[in-house]
Length: 261
Image 1 (cartoon, rainbow, N blue to C red):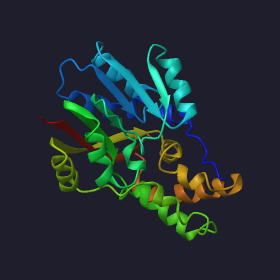
Image 2: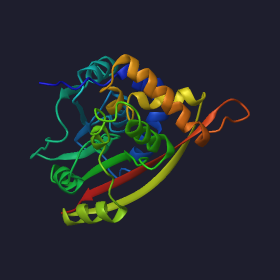
Image 3: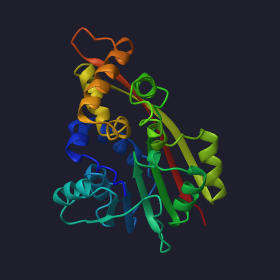
Image 4: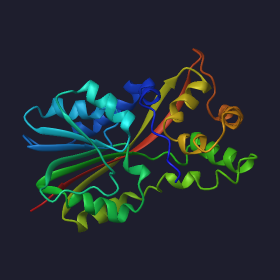
């Protein structure tokens, strides 16, 4: 049996400030007063869970993730909270949560037409599903991943790597799926612009996310060659600024749905 390599919490946290900003923006639009039960799905190392717990100190806040390494970091960060190993793709809760928070995780899961209504059904009446997903598959950073994967000597072994990221639906899709599940829905998209320390920093950013499905399938020598070709491919799209920085454009889709009734 093939076991997928675990997520690397330390690599992920190299850009903690930048990765936490969308969670802050999402939480600011959650229209709840004093929820009793909150869960952070795909909680990672706990940076987003910490925000939820601080915003709603009277609630019981939990975290769930499929990565033991991420959960270890989360438990050290927030020893007073409960963090559980689990699969978001099969998770549901009949008792009902007041807040289901999912920051940068659902893009890894298939069948959003079925997934989003299932999560909405795990809300208590008046509860809120708050979701943020990278919507950057058409950005040069991700187009280059697919091109390098298809053109190199590793094309065969990387043929299925891109399928690990779900295709993000349209604004209308999410609004319709959630409205049919009994929710009123708020949807928006924000493009963040991150000033990073050169092209290598772009590769470092995505090693723990977008590049991971490709790199996990390669040998050490192949990974080195893949990354070299990747940097060469993205160079023209991310010119060096006068201060030596490069500007990484990063669109993110936000969905806030409140269960009515």
